[in-house]
Image (cartoon, rainbow, N blue to C red; front, side, top):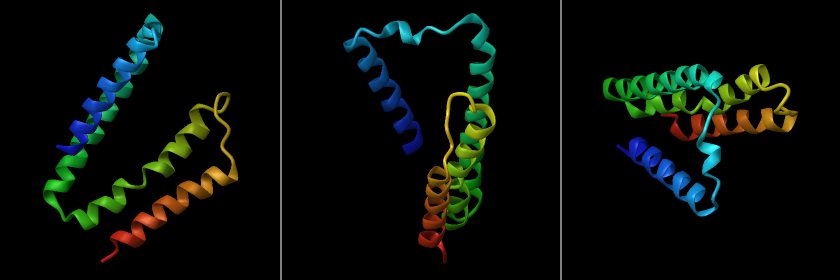
Length: 109
């Protein structure tokens, strides 16, 4: 429930921000990009669904450390797919590792 609420509020605030700052043209995408965004949204949707399924079938203390490996994957995929736009530094990698390690320590049984 919280994830759905956060996503809905975030979308609402983004639209309000774009309307207030008169940047609504940023909501338009190129026709060639549609397939990419469609695939990305389907992957994100399936990730959320599998998260909910996992949480309903097991203990939160087991699932949360797995879910909180997201920063590692974000850094990895940024390095793979956004090389020309994103600079991945040692500091970024260490930060992601520390975030995951911290969550694992906190949720350890």
